[in-house]
Length: 243
Image 1 (cartoon, rainbow, N blue to C red):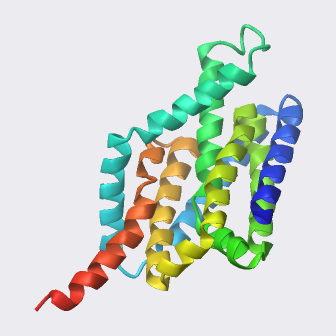
Image 2: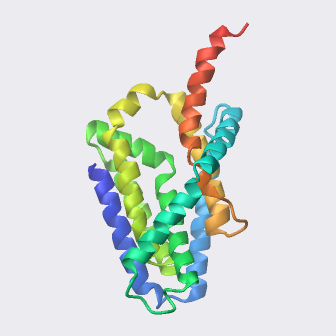
Image 3: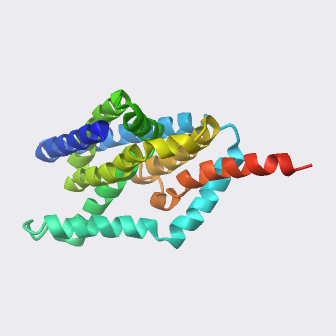
């Protein structure tokens, strides 16, 4: 859990600096920084997807994951959590801050940062490594990246970015606590397909929330990260049974 705690701290520090500096940074600069992060996220997503050994597994995972995500209303659930946090912790803001636009901005910051900080091979591999051996070097690198990203995002999207630290703590910390069990059932092929699936989700995140090309309900695809290794296991099980 050491790496996850470090990650949470850097996200909070980055958010605090971003909120403090947000009013002093030119709007064009903030937009350019967020666009740069969007392009970088897009590139990382492509890099992750290229790790797949079977693109059909990724496609199947996304389809099944989307069906489950929409059925379970994950996007709405994440948005509801963000809205509740905004109402709970932003009671003393001005009338303008309490307007609908402010709440939408808070939720967008929370969703964007939560997805960006929790989707990716560094999250999974780093959390497993930290939980299994206590080596948090990989998560330390991720923490630095997330801290800079939180600074950039919060300068544009506000304090909602900081509450993504809760998502990091629960999701990433949970993986670390269950690392031994996860490691015992995951093989390299499962990890590769889960990484590739996460790459496609990152592409959606970059296009939707960061580059604002088109609105994509990215949160609904999160179950695909669990579906991918299960599909790999299913294919490995039925393979010998086929003629």
